[in-house]
Length: 433
Image (cartoon, rainbow, N blue to C red; front, top):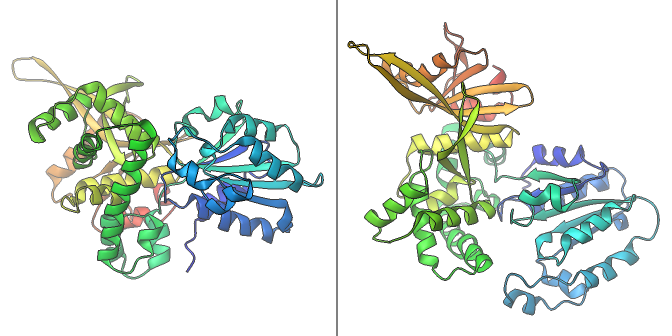
């Protein structure tokens, strides 16, 4: 059964022949190769592109490496800086571009190609080549796209399955599907598995033997245990404000590990480069500026987060917030954590200042939304706590509260909209309700 990724497929389609290198980034196993080599490839065929004008190559495929005379065993065993010889690749590729008609070049894991930036920039100078590449390491791709591709790199970041993609595939009761998604996340391979045992075993294995091992090998780290313990602390604290010092203190007090702030910060950067997680800065709404620390951390896939903790900390509040964050990114929004300052005076006239949080400020173009993730609002007091930050923004941007309970969008007397998380996730236009 095919898992549809229509949002990402359409993002590729609208970028066809735009003169840019299309760079598909994302965590390993998120479905980038399937998107490019199956869904987009089939789209090109359906549009009448001749099969011999679609050239595919995967730099992590032994079969493809043998085609160009590379030894995949040697490449696999060498250190991370051992790359595929670009001359061998180009000697294989050039004879296949036999005429001046448009050729579509689909390349997987291009960061494994030596001097890939120069190779890609060479492609940009040929008017009959439309190039698409995937990569799993932002150090080589996402962060340096504009500079390395001379301002002509166009990034499409692919997340694991959103809940709407997941539910379109699995169907059934929405609440049961959401519970399952909240535990096992959206990695396509996990979604395809039939039993909870299969899913949990797969996710635990992938976290340990793929993602962490990748980081260890890529950066030449000797202490895999310590970076794993940093990841444990980060996973336990998703959606809470933190900083490297707090994490280092927790490492010392809980794990008995002495580690400095700078090392924690470096390890988190490595995890970001591998697209495992994202740090989200706070934005002062009234001051109109970013605040460096503390910040929040969210996982690219909630199933991997849960697997790292052996599925022992399934807190609905924090998990729902992480899922909402990923959904907003899936819809193309720039997402920040918001902060507004509240001032009041006590009976003696002494002024006190309080920082009130807005879970998310979601921005795209001229549109902006303030969003609170509130697992439950049982009474008026809790409602006032959740909306106090909205009251202080003093602007007209739309303000939305998302709760776990199933609920169609409804507006209160202040104009604030409340809706259930499943309604939010399954309706792509839910923010316009």
